[in-house]
Length: 210
Image (cartoon, rainbow, N blue to C red; front, side, top):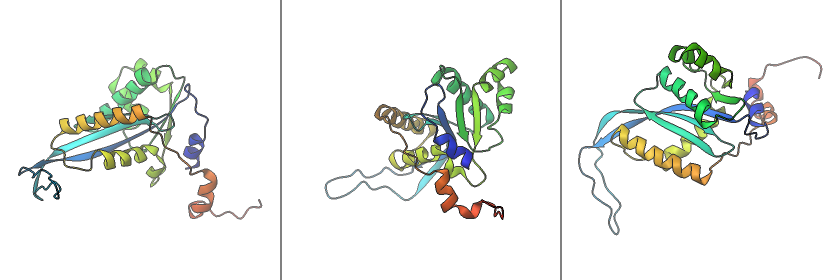
């Protein structure tokens, strides 16, 4: 935990960007009856019945301190999707960076092995040389600021029925473009000092002399 909190305290440096990565999913919902449009004195009304229409998987890479994010909508969350997203991060999004710190959860696909499984060895090696992986601890995914970003996305964009993956992709792309243009950042204020007080029960009990 403190390792991640130390990463978040680093000075902002374009040569060494901090990127938070996370994945989520959205259930696509189709209406079975046409909704009644809103009118004066009456909000839009729709039937409680609906039809499930697959799941859209979201993979997010965001730089919370500089107001940038990229969210891709896929029909699966396989290792290939993660590896492809990481390659784009290194070769396109932050091609000029000397080293990228990537904060993410400890999923078995979020490893250098996934890069080797999907790319030629020299490509995988080149990508890994520019990456520093920092994993959230077990039950500590809340330390990943990408979850904060997904929370904003859910409230502002995904809080309604979206019928299919293409619609989810269009809406997420529009939201991402708007938020990037606005330069939306995250003001992270929880520090290691706070953790030692508020989460004292998570630390081992010691009997040594201070």
